[in-house]
Length: 67
Image 1 (spheres, helix red, strand yellow):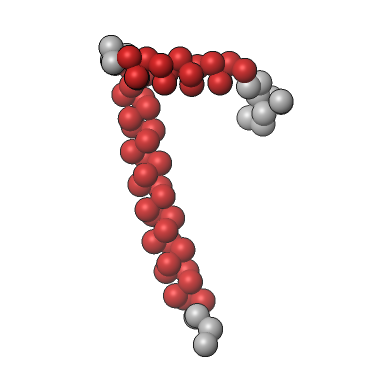
Image 2 (tube, one colour; image 1 turned 60 degrees about the vertical axis):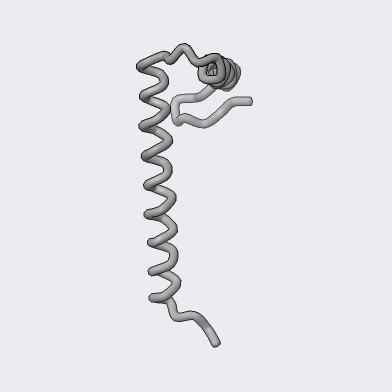
């Protein structure tokens, strides 16, 4: 049997909503960490790693990486 197109779309939309919710959470947490600068050594290490990685990567006007 084949799965109907509407069922596929329902599943795909449910998956998209789930992923979008997780992305919003992650961005909120990232903004919070950048604004508050907590003193936790693990967070400090993570932030420095992220800063190092973003400084190594060059972006052009369209946001594409130039590695």
